[in-house]
Image (tube, rainbow, N blue to C red; front, side):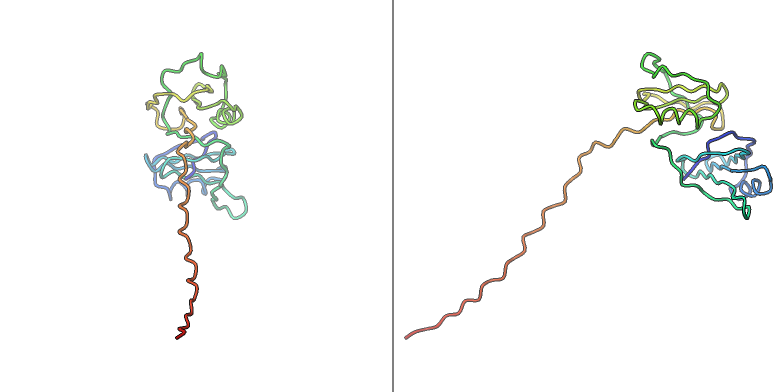
Length: 186
């Protein structure tokens, strides 16, 4: 499941099929995204990147030859857990990577986190065009009032440190019983 990240031109509430049709009917549309959770359709007129998305999300780009929509398997260098309309609560700016910058897209913010080895999470505010790179995972993430991707708290999940159980040792193969011959001597 993918989601589009880029500069949205419009959004509307509709079905997934109507969302795709809206993009294909618009000569300027280069990509379309859809969130099943709230039946939101997002139309893009400029290039998008695709990231893992929430359940029921969809992102497709328009192929210029044939005017069809194609999903792109591109993934970021880090995996992120997030839901749209969230913010990182109680940010400790002493522990943040002191990188608060102005970025026009969430993709730029995520790229900064991808490039920073110490980045464990980021918060992007699209309305303010602000990105905060964090060297820690926030304890609390809360929902915002917005109904789109304009505000996101994204967290790199903790690595799975559960030791892997080794495969059981195979039972020994029984060796053939030697054939014993007896001769009775009287």
